[in-house]
Length: 242
Image 1 (cartoon, rainbow, N blue to C red):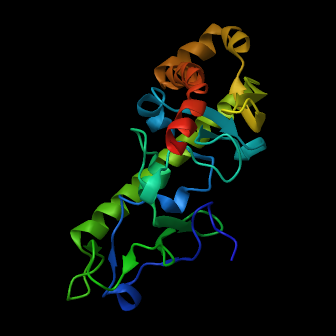
Image 2: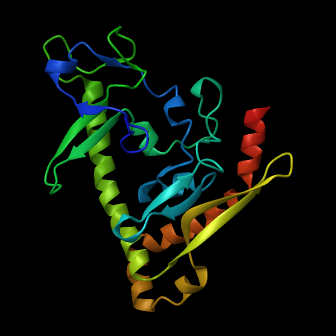
């Protein structure tokens, strides 16, 4: 089956009828993300992620959205090591949310909490956190994950607005990154965009002031600062292979 949302294989609505006896053991093994080289990043995460991750923009038109680069090529994640251990510091919320996700109606008027039933940590052995208690009521854990996913969706909408503003101001341009492995072989990473620093300087003062009030200007500079992290990708891959 084609994976939904990059890492989800079979996301189904969470219900006490279907999942009363099920538990979730999550947050330790990130093997599910071992073959993806980028994930979406929320605007609220820029400050935490920019110190070690490279933030770029992916997609076209209304689908443009910030992403964090995790590997040099398709099928590669430099931040996941042996036994699915996360090797760096900050873990993007997109991955921390897994195996939960919201499914929206066609008009986005309502959302249903879903879980990926193919997640290896989804079990009936009582390992981890139960979803429902013996009475079929949501556990504190499930309530926390519902709130986390709700907050994620709200921040997702805000991030979409930020990305659309950048596109409307024509501040994004196609970019690429070049890497060399230990043997000197070069590889190119394409398919993403970055902010044009010169174009940002030319944005009218009134618009810049508005962006400063909404913290969007700070997000722009956090993104530009994060590009300095790109050369460390080779170091991560070398350490992972050692």
